[in-house]
Length: 262
Image (cartoon, rainbow, N blue to C red):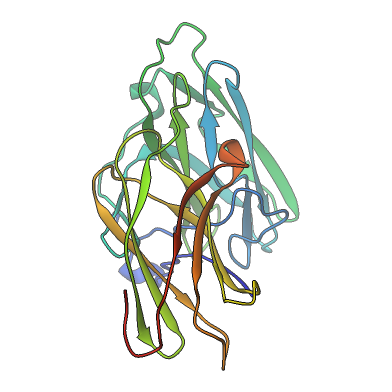
């Protein structure tokens, strides 16, 4: 059973404001042909730039029946203690972020077509500790009324990749089939990966993809739903994906029952 974190906010156009007319899609960077929502898809959903990888291409495809105008801006997203991601009101124009260049500035994507956005890390930029800003693509119908969308893609910029120092603070069973894990990134880059739970037979019970710890020092929790009649988990693994592939961020052996936590 594979689950992915995904948050969507789709509101009627009449109630749209710059703060709330946003759809946030945070899914596994390794997913292929994943739909962002019914009419618009975006790939990739996460970008990491460094001294070796200075360019990236974001493809936006329109499977709606109407053309959309695409306008990129930079913004910030905040991660709450429960792992949820929340947009902020802040909009930063492309010109205000010279370290990472994005073009074209505005484009039209026709029905059944796709467009590519190029992302370039300035060759002269001095790279240090990790910075993260989110590239927000506002999509508005070219003619007439219709839903207005926004797709947000996190962009990480780093010098040398410093592996995160992740610790599992606590785990608990909230219900017979609901397992909660509390983690903290003490230092290093923002981890990106998946949580896996195993029972005492070595069988994988469930998996949660696209697990990120954005705020260093913050205790952040994630909830995984277990299959019906599953044995209690005895091993938790937080494994890296993308540039962290092959990294075990954290692991914890458990001795728990369904009516208590350790």
